[in-house]
Length: 575
Image (tube, rainbow, N blue to C red; front, side, top):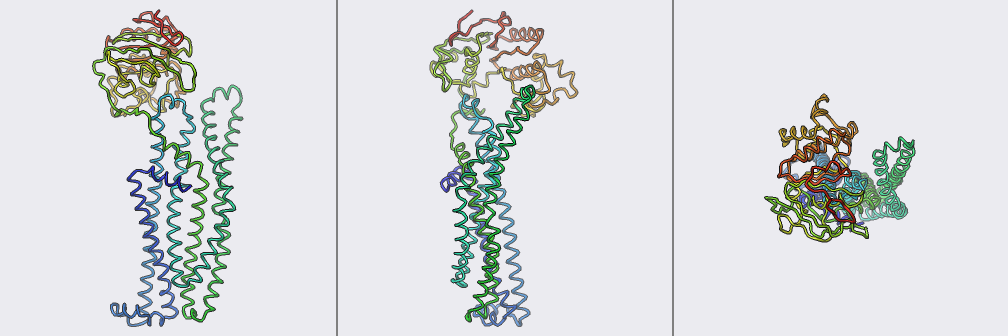
């Protein structure tokens, strides 16, 4: 577990590591004030009950030469002011430290979430589309947040408690080493015994909690994603019951860990204070301590009052961290996964200025885990301005070819040439030349405006290009009928739109980018015949500098294209 915590710390940015060091220094300062507060109780009680102890002290005599205290009342006043100042200062420092500690813990949690998402979207495209989305959501949200409250904050609490227990122990040894050793041995033996008893249960709960957290989120996604079929099959209650079962098991494991963490508190409070009462009795029994018995008992009592919660916090933090072992491991695995591809706009650019042609030569590709190639020794050359149609059976490789041309998939074999020069398409410069109308259209829960200019800040949207895209996609008639126009809200996954309206938005999204190459995957499957004819006419009449590659089952819409190919046995045959 310690190794895992060091790995977690090594994943922090330089800024967070420096901030963590500041937290440790702040905790040290807090501990110093706590010890000063406990130490000051000795002279405070002594000056009230037995002022002669203080007045005859050699250190007091030296200090009094500066302060010139004349009577007992002034001495009590000075000591009270000193004790109050230290106590209030300790409280203030502790509040400020806790505030900064909370800020840093949640900032680190935010960093973890961001890094997980960055790592996930920087995988190979095939890995991304095959990801378990429920696990990604769980890692970036619930588990990252869980790590904040159940690992990061407990780490700082562990440091805090360790410093405080160590400092109070040193103070007690200085005052009375017998009492100190007896007290510490009492607390340590009880907490270690309880820890060993419940260690196997904590490990079991850690595994259960991680497993059923993933299953709970997965069930929610399955309910929302398959709601239509669940309604038609009258199986909603079954899925809800499955979620309830997973959620209960997850919560029960949380309850168990929480109970184990807090259990010693109630046992120790009763036994601990009874133990301190006997300590006070034995201190008072020794003649050598009788004159100081009340002040020493006060220090021991205040030390006990600090030690009890410190030991409890230390135990609770350690058990909480131990109970989070599996969730922490899943986070660390993801943080340590290196990025394969940079899909950002700032990724390394290759100059494709003046695009004239793209040629694929002897291209082959097989999906991971597949024993056969979906594309086999495929060769094709597409010139600037060509309108190319591709037909073929489902699963023949049409969409895979589009993904290769778009730079989303890198072929296993073969070469790609741009303007007769060998090139690599998996970079931002090439992707910035391509608009795609996919078969599966994603709409976000936002306005029509935001969905057409998908991925672009609203302040940067070119309204002239937007309106042109709306007109050419024949979306304008629908928008005119809405109350809010382009600001009309679309529900999640386009639940308040028809299939045709969703497809028109996808077409408008592609046209808005006004790029050199447009790829279309079954672009008219949800359109009525008239809209389909108008759209295809618009596509075929596009400027000669725009290249179009269209995949479809409907060969009739390709009649005015420059060339039509059929996909057979992983290759293209010209019709």
